[in-house]
Length: 474
Ligand code: SAH
Ligand code: SF4
Ligand code: F3S
Image (cartoon, rainbow, N blue to C red; front, side, top):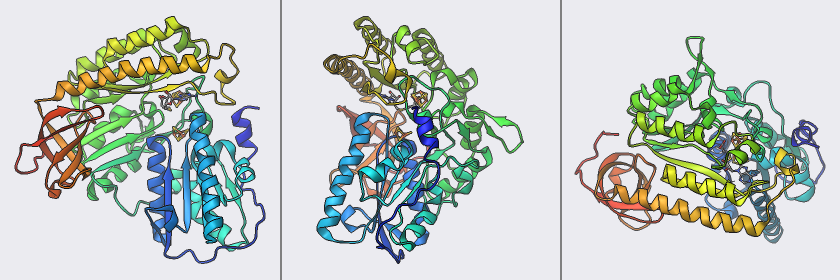
């Protein structure tokens, strides 16, 4: 049975029975734990925001919560297992403390596993898929009203949840995310996302622009437009025409106060010339792009159904660098996809050397039931995956260190977004998304200031503020 049919069979809220427990939900603590991608982080932000006016206030520790939301990721087996170990811990805590606690599982595991979660983990009250979380208030009300009723809602609504979600009630700070597109039609051999998030859907441009304006009004200086496949964006514009991502980026960049703009995650197939040109023409568009390639071998790229070759990818990188010479790139890689030979893996290492990524994420292929690659022969042994991952990570690490080193000695604009690790320190981001730790006054929070980069570390850089006052440069 494919994942999609499994999802369909669970698409309606499923009541189960359990003794009554919860009544009043006013002024109660809400703890949200998030796994997975930026889209899941954004969804968590929206859930908290939606529940706040209903009397749920965010708390920092699960022990202080009356409701715990576990916003889950299904991308690799490990990510899914993390949910069940967390639920085991929660059950033990709940029994030991004897307190009332509402537990909701949301996100991609909720979508993929539905009421199986209730069977495996009786501590759970609500299972809500990523396209149904706008109904959380109603589901919470029902489960608290009706004698411990348990509900599963993994519906894919005809109307986008974004049209039904209430407007945000709070900002996100200096660095904000904004979902513009959701779902994926690419069906890469290994990936669950098309099944857990459904078909590609784009939000109308006017909604995106209005949300961007509200984010700026509440302190955002940097906005990242999010989508599982963001460069496939094709929303209706205010002019009635279909806007692509390049058009949308121009309009968001035109909003006063948007100093920095990014977008993720992109697919190489949808990296069209207009979008490449946007990197040359939109000053607010930061010189950093996450462009997953997965493999450097044409045979494996074909087996993955990525719909492009290694040479296609290198051509896109060349075009991007021609448009924006200071552009740095990051990527995602999978080692040990079924059928990957050592020659295929060498081609991946070669591509890493050729491109010189500033950063990259790499994963061992994880079999996902219901996806095409799960039923392919030629699965790769774990020990071979381990060895390839270690070699790939070493190559990626070398590239990242080399990139960070190139910034040492230069003066770069840093956007400060939070307090740093040590007293007196602030944390910020360079245009290339490097984390920076600097001794700086807290008044720089939410501001951009020039910083001289003094040293490069494994995953960050450190430096010194060189402008007395925050400056307005990007
Ligand atoms: N939409 C994005 C990201 C999808 S998930 C894209 O198209 O690239 C993020 C990353 O997880 C993927 O880029 C891929 O590298 C990794 N991933 C997805 N499925 C995986 C699997 N079954 N095993 C290992 N890694 C996987
Ligand atoms: Fe998954 Fe491929 Fe879609 Fe990315 S493009 S979300 S890897 S199916
Ligand atoms: Fe994970 Fe779902 Fe994102 S599977 S990576 S949370 S789209």
